[in-house]
Length: 133
Image 1: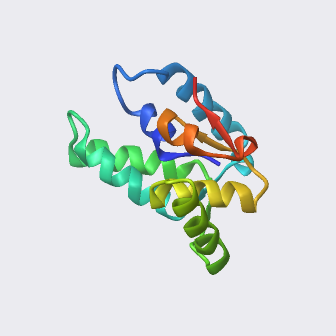
Image 2 (image 1 turned 60 degrees about the vertical axis):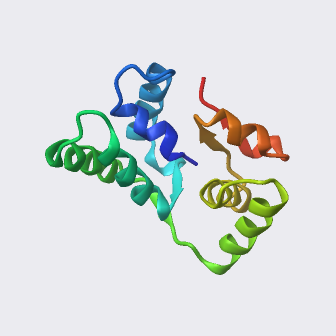
């Protein structure tokens, strides 16, 4: 499970843990079948890419094209995922986006790789989360 906070470091300059994020990019390129993201992933990335320093139509399009070319599976926002996300959002005081990621990790018996330390601390079932360092 790949969080947008990790993927966006592929395109940011002077961000903490960029080298670790680039290693993740290499891993995704070699083994995309080991990764999954919720359908909201690309929308989140688009929103942030458009606000990044030096954003231009061409740079945003190139970044999106790269992410799409990786072949990462995108999971739809079905009933079971949303029900679990609602539980986590309320019980663990998570944003609805973070709750969707962690719910997908739980439902796929995966691990949510995130660069968001604050969100990672809120996850009560630590086996479902790993912080990029």
